[in-house]
Image (tube, rainbow, N blue to C red; front, side, top):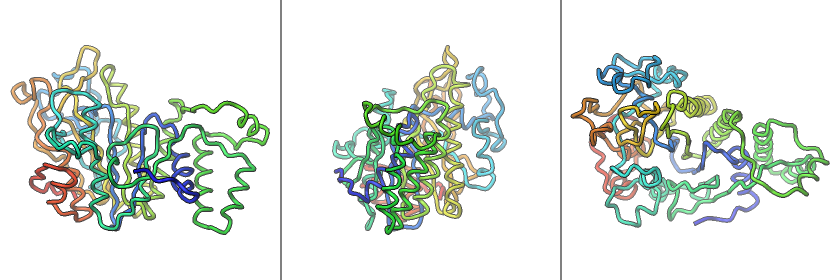
Length: 410
């Protein structure tokens, strides 16, 4: 159910959020929700199937280098005497040393064998099993979580972007705003906004933030009256940022999301694309890794002391093949990895039962064997942060899930 945005909703959700997330090719959607608990939860969907074996490398497994002679040969920082981090995430090592960064290896959703991005992402965001009832498959697990939290203010849950974010879909109401054009505000418009909200301090501040984000993303001076008149006469068109501005967009989004989380927002969900590395993975994976690192460090810096109350989890639809392919990339696989971070996380560890990389240990003779469920990791994080009952998590939020033993993530 989508609610109409009124004047205040437009400034909170449309103008401010839209300026920071307009036309992100790397972020298809972002959602914000407030709830009656003090901790914060940030969920990131890594669209395209992250290669967990490249990001968190099992350097201590004797088979690893021979399976990937052209991948993972650039030494990254050692996490311990077995695991090595991709050098593209080396900037996160202070978090690892502080116990605020962790990983879970050999995990997956219950999705098997078809290796379709669309189906895999649908199952990831629905939080279901292969045989779950249809009504659960049509809902997102984050939406069901919101519905299960007494006092959650669903009217402040936002969907931002042009594409659906199924993790938020369901019965709980949400507001949505789709940025169809580049937002530019003329000098007259700025003065009008300042006068309109002069006596309404919270919304005056929101308007100022939105305008600052607009300038930050366009990297240009505000339009002159003549330019504004010309723009009004021109046909409307979608303005997509070029590749060189991607990092500026991540920084702007992290800054704005952190500002919201410092206030009453408690849950943020978004997606980062670019992980489908079928060819030239050595170079191709570096750009999405840089975006992910920047997002995480930007949130840490922007949250300040609130970072200590925050849990960040990043998950992907499935892993990639153990062996590199003929184009020095990897193909769709099964077992993968999750990333956890935040002051509320017990980091400094690589969790999960490692199955090994010998031929007899692989799934279908080609993939990392999944030994854990991404839903269980998310469920234990939620249980630790919010105190949500295990029974509710295993039936209402993630139907049919067996959470297993507590891995001590939170």
